[in-house]
Structure formats: structure tokens, C-alpha cells
Length: 88
Ligand code: SF4
Ligand code: SF4
Image (cartoon, rainbow, N blue to C red):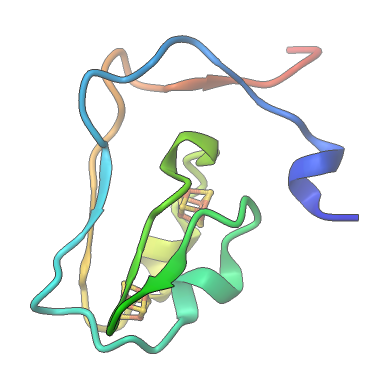
């Protein structure tokens, strides 16, 4: 079972803009982000990886941490967080 199915997320609201992006010219397509992401956010799109399912992001920061090319631009969603966890 995928982690995202064990810990389903509820988003506060739709974010006005995408808070996690790839800096396309820096991405070397290593796939580390996709490998570590517990929410299956990252997918290969053409020659690079993109946070296709960014609305599922739990804001753990793991992808940013493992991206040695510093190709991930992560900004806290408006209001500091975009998600709430059940039972919190
Ligand atoms: S970890 Fe960074 S360089 Fe590697 S595929 Fe992801 S965004 Fe690109
Ligand atoms: S911050 Fe965490 S959940 Fe969000 S895309 Fe990166 S690894 Fe996935």
C-alpha cells in the first residue's frame, strides 16, 4: 500500500499558484525526486521530471533535499501550509 493511501490528505484550499516547480534548465533527470516522494508527485515528462501531481504534496521537503542539481523551487503554500492531516 502506498503511503498516500495510508495517510490521505485534505487540502485547505486550491492554491492560487503552483508552489513547487522544477527549474527546467537545471534538471538532469536523475529521478531522485520521483524515487523518494511518498506522494507520487513527480513524473518524467519528456526529458525532465515535473511535479505533475503537486496537489498531492505533503510538503515534506524530501525531493528538495535529494535534488543534487538544486533544480527544485519549493515555496511554502500561501498561509504556510496547503494541507491538513486527518486526526490533527
Ligand atoms: S531530483 Fe532534481 S535533477 Fe533529479 S529529476 Fe528531480 S528535479 Fe530533476
Ligand atoms: S515535498 Fe515531499 S510530498 Fe511534496 S513533492 Fe517533495 S517529496 Fe513529494
